[in-house]
Image: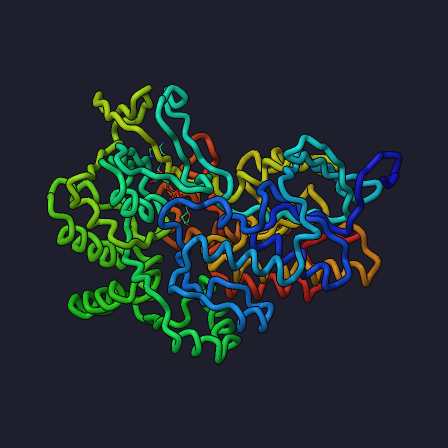
Length: 540
Ligand code: NA7
């Protein structure tokens, strides 16, 4: 027990890190390498973050496995062997566990421990962080810095459907799936939602269940994932020059995908036959590259419409029942909600044990026996909520962080405001890895995580070298940054539909476009801020 400024505290660190997913693990490693003491708090009983929680059938990354991995250790890159083009959840979790063991991270991670509140003490320039472990122990830790690594999609969104708690069968959320799996054999299953989690799990649940009823509010665009086993030659080629692949990816807007060709003309410059051939080629490659054929698909609605129309044609030719095909056909801008990748999603609606119900005009009610919508009762044995997350801000706000004169809740009452997506005015010595206002979810998350972790590490090293104790984003710099993020987002088609990027999926959440499009300019800007003596921050 240590006594600090009259408060009984259990532990004192240079930094407390919240979350032991990919961000928290690398942050811990990077700080330890520089001789800082750090403690990680993690709610789960193991590392992995997103990949610990999302264990629903078919859960898989939508970035190629060779790219969705750490680049900080060449040895790690060489020793780990991915088996599939898009790694499935168990393999990614295994990778996270391997990293934890390889770098001996677990000894500084306190698992099954939730942060209840965090208060910054301006007199000592320390955060005082109260945690509660699953065994009920409450503890206060103090640390000069608090670094959040809570993930962008970690706070589940479970809509308050009337009657939700009266359902007599089993209920699941894709984001908190049971660890020993669920057997739907012989069961009637309701699936609410048609985002990525639903698109990945629907084909597999349909194979098992007696009947699957999908409740759709908005039709989704999905492109074939074309997942497959990697060949020994592909693995060897990547490993032969990993640094080149990483460097090329850091020049890509999303921090990944350099291995696939990109188009550098407008979709409107190509004639119709050329455009269709380009989309067909990319449909066959599968994945995000579908939107990479032309340079304006996410900038120009007319150009975008040509890609959207191509997908609509695929739906029409794949789904045999015309009414179901029509219902599955999206009308919004393609890509403004995160594009989904599937294995047999549209094909699944040709099965006789699958039905689709439109809930766009008739909200859902849950009854004791199932789902009621539009005056019709659908009796089921199990309900799967694939209703997504309170993205980007949900888990941050749960920390209950309070600065000397404001709380994070108050500072973000009208939506998240940050400087560089890394720091919030009013909350000194707090850093937010992949926070709102940074490229985060519009990129390969690991590319963005590494860039943020290294920036924060370098900042702490620089402060230590200069004997500085306190860093806070200046209000004017933050205001200018928020304006900049909005201006960049407004140049794109991203803000045009009701996506979780905007917070539109959570009733009552303020609508603000949260991520910043474009990794390379962001990496340059944040490096320039550091090079200019942490311009826009007040250091004391
Ligand atoms: P998403 O993409 O947010 O999808 C959630 C789905 O749930 C989506 O189809 C929503 O319809 C639907 N939803 C949400 N609330 C309701 C209500 N109240 N009624 C009916 N339907 C509802 O979450 P995912 O878990 O699939 O994917 C999240 C990210 O994880 C994904 O983008 C990848 O990056 C990985 P809506 O479209 O809002 O009308």
